Length: 142
Image (tube, rainbow, N blue to C red):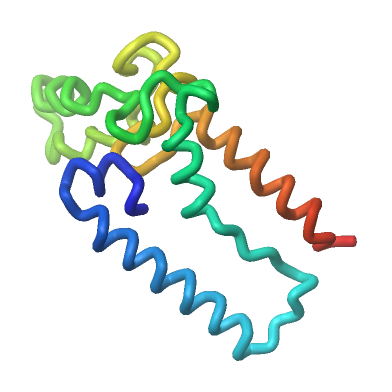
């Protein structure tokens, strides 16, 4: 999560990266300690994968990397505030995003992140391809 707009904009990239690394180490260690059959799961290095996508975002079909969001979060919060919604700031999330609230037309295909932490449709599709290729290469499920 150190490569998300939230981490980059908030200056917490190193802390989030460290937290993700600690989680990954703990997960791998726990699976090993429990002697879970390694033919039943695949550990994925999504950190390196996401960094690679961000470093080559244009080659991966994006016009905006992990520096901004596809959803116009400020406008979404402003609209909720205008309508008198309680806790209007909660509406600054991809959960409430739609084509009408995109930063630009087709932003779900040209931005990496929908909001400050959640991937767009296009980044999710690339992630699915990555996962499928790793599962196929591992032989899990055969």
